[in-house]
Image (cartoon, rainbow over all chains, first blue to last red; front, side, top):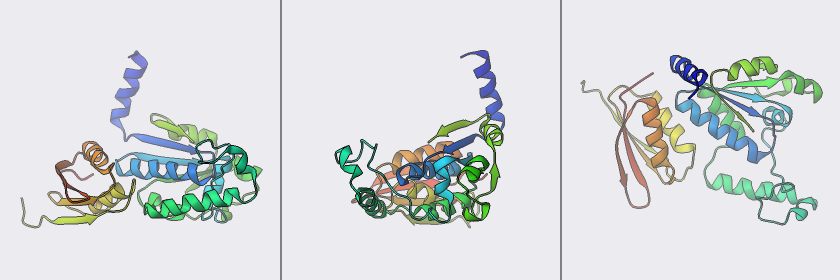
Length: 166
Length: 81
């Protein structure tokens, strides 16, 4: 262990442990894991922040939060040949299939997961640049969003903790 | 030790991660020091997850009992933050 790591570990012990999850994807199979990690880490006493950037913003847009999809394209884990994913209707089919399995496992819906995350003290931050690029006004984001910030704030939120990029 | 300590049974059977942990945490939030929470779970990850949670939160894992088709995990609240 280098001196720097030892020092950082010492500092870490002094404060609440932090976790920053950067979500840059807006598909159901990316948003669920992010929310599962966030809610669980919060129950374990961590100060958890989620930063929504690029497609991740779709996860916190009122319009799309309840209808996120799973795409079989570029997803070798799906149980079908990749080329079939390009056929119209395949994304809807994959989404329906996964949605059914998720309900069977009694997993809350994504909007409900956000409510739960808020209740557990997870802080939700939207990326201002992405909002500008995508033409997303503040009003179109879900009420659970705490604030609109830039990368500098995000970097400082991750300081002294662990950062997960999805 | 007072006599006001409570025993709560939380049924998380059928729900998967993070269900059992968030159910346990909600019960923990409304509990007092000394209370005992029994968590019923079918998720095979619940044993390891609750163990990790108790270690992290400073609470006591009292017992893990395999019942017919589910697991009964008993936690004693020994630390409130």
